Amino acid sequence: MSEEKTSVSEIDIILKRIRELEQEIERLRKAGIERAEKEKLLKELRELVSATREANVINIRIATTARGAIFRLKRGVWALMGQLKKQYKEKFDLETSKSNWAKMASLIIRKINEAGLTDYPTKIIMTYDVIEQDEKVIFKPKEARILTFEPAGHLLATFEEAEKEEAKEEVIEVKEGGEEEE
Image (cartoon, rainbow, N blue to C red; front, side, top):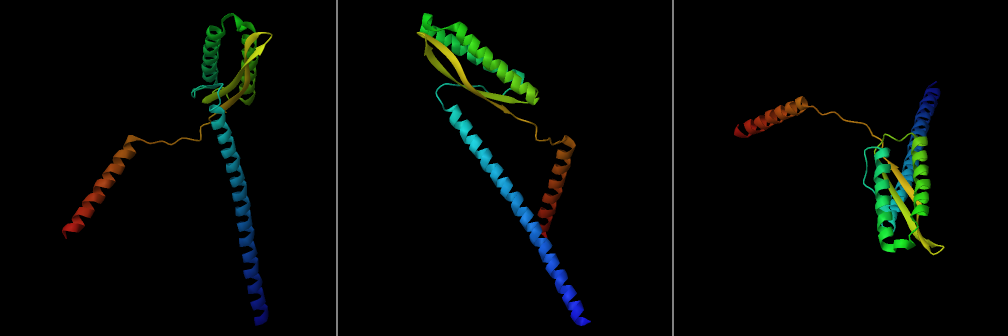
């Protein structure tokens, strides 16, 4: 009988250890996935940083909505086309450049709408080429990176909480000061 109790308790210990090992394996599996996700995000960030350092980049600052970001990008593109018009004068093909910009703008708008991200804070980084075609200089967008920032949640801090914390700190200081005098 005592041998049965010993073997049952040993089996319980072994089963408990197996459960612990399964939990540890699950934790490590999750950590591995998290690590892979972090590495993927770091790679994307490096690509973004390198994209902003390229020569032909229109890099707008973050806007409160995607609509605002598109508006800022539009202003940047039109400013660039104005500079190109001044620089190349009659050689710059404004109509083809406008058409190229319109195609890219409609694609950006469509992608943002499909993703349902029109009301999120957005930043757009667009790379472009200035090419020569049929003895004309043309603005040709290459790619646009659309960065959206979703709210990660919110915290609430009230003035009443701040006053309570200040009162607690004063009580702690008084207690500390009182202990030193004794």
